[in-house]
Image (cartoon, rainbow, N blue to C red):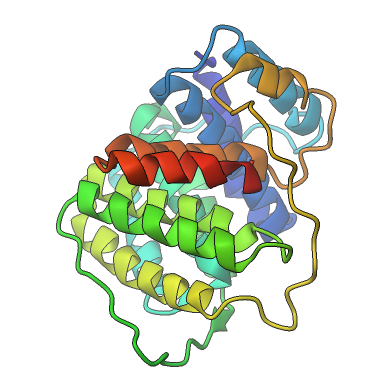
Amino acid sequence: MLDRNYLIRGLDVLASAHKTNYFADGHKGGAIVAAYFLVAEQPVEEGVSDLIAGIIDDCWGPDKLGTPFPTETSDPGLLGQVTAALAGSMGQLRQAGHNVILPALALKAFRERPDAVTPSRVDGICRLIEAFDTSTEIPPVDGDEFPDPQTPEEFAQFALTEVLRCAEAFVGRGQGWTGHMCTFGRAVVDLGRLGYDAPARKAQQDFMLYVKRARMGPLETDKARAEHPQTDLFPLEAEYWRRRRGNDQGLGHSLKYPYGFYGLMSLCGDADLKRRCLEAAFRIF
């Protein structure tokens, strides 16, 4: 289990990202929060939490990503400002859904640490949402038919089916769309489980726009990239992280993708689908 103070660190990075680099530092703050919940919610091997804590400290320690926020009186009622900003940003696909992915992680961290719901942090998260102001026009595609999942389990099964479709379509062209299928799908689930039903419903509609874009496959702007080698190691195992200690973690996708993937897998009841997802997971891990 990671120390709960990592949630504070992640929130501070998320809430200050609009002042530094909203996209890059927002990712890093999200990675710290995702790492906490990955360890807390999944059956990780002994030693994984210490290894991940070391990676976070090495890459995104307080000396690298700014100072903590000032002490202020907490007020959970302020979260209405975050959900309002989130709802206002939806209805279009904005930067691959990061206007939903990162605030959903922040809201989950706030639920775990209500003492962190302070005016400065809430304002920072709202400004982060507003920073994702670039939208992608998604043209209609012949034959597009999308289900209307009514339960988290149904939604997880749909999302994982699209993960498989996307992983195959983008072989050799980078698997960012596949990885974010996991993180965006998980954000939809998280919003619903946190009780934010209306934002979750809007997020699900935006997720379908994301799926539509992913189904278009690689575009000329998607550069050719080498595939990850197949491996028998996965993020729930300590050796997986031992081999990554000391490496540059970039934007932190190595932590966010597993959080999204395993969260969806935990909800899915289709054993064959889960098996196939595990066989393809090396492409994003």
